[in-house]
Length: 206
Image 1 (cartoon, rainbow, N blue to C red):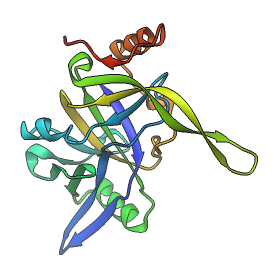
Image 2 (image 1 turned 60 degrees about the horizontal axis):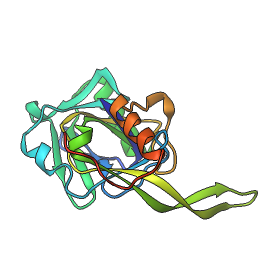
Image 3 (image 1 turned 135 degrees about the vertical axis):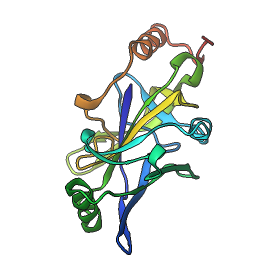
Image 4 (image 1 turned 120 degrees about the vertical axis):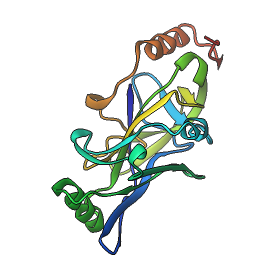
């Protein structure tokens, strides 16, 4: 299982007694920070097939299984694909976690999302070396410089595990929190093999 994080607008909407939060758990064509020797993007349409299978996905608060906010099989969590990426709508329960999440979203205190997923790396991903605009810390500003990096492009997902609203997003498009970074052995092997010597191209079929 792998996890990814991002800064995202999370909104709280109230309709009568129903409290709902909405946002994007993942965005298309956004380049991640360094994930341990490579960067990553999600190709447009990558969620289409897995969503058509109607997967059993839960919505959590801060990755906690003790703070379940909704579930697709219960109809309280709805996932969809739009031009931006993976969109979610979650009808919050009348629990302390549900009420607190709604109030924090209304105040703007919650501004991060995460999602956990699985891929068959050799069949669903592509690796290439690309030139990117990297950023280097300067004394007074961030200086952009050209750099080359291995980019892992995810074109499909084997499974979606959960989406989560988080207080501390660790994937603000420029960095990733290594404490929550789970990268499989297959991915690490492919990145290492591509680096010495580096060869561009698609992953071999499994």
